[in-house]
Image (tube, rainbow, N blue to C red; front, side, top):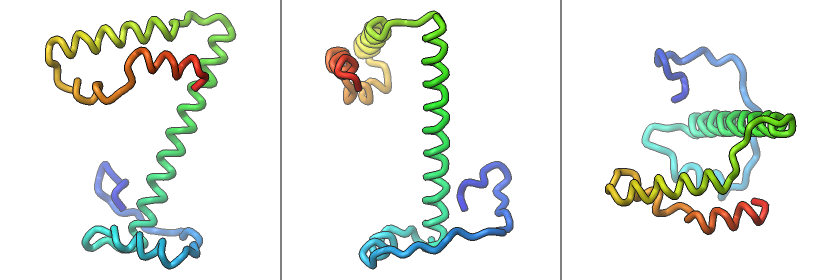
Length: 123
């Protein structure tokens, strides 16, 4: 129960999730990656919490995207994708020139050319 953050309090459990039937190979795979002292139940609970957080973030992302689309349709001021890419390329070039930290991560990303091609391909 790692996600009760602020006060490190473990709430009383008052509900249970349904048991899930899985193939023996899946259970063995899960058991093989358990951390020392971690139970299968703790692993499942942690996995459910992570999936819940991921889906909540995804739903919020979609909500914001739809709101942005609606604002764009109503004539909100927009910035062209090409202009954003140019500024990002300039920032990247500047960071590389000055040897800024974090540039290593940027090197693995898309270049402006491939980012533009994926943008125009509809992705």
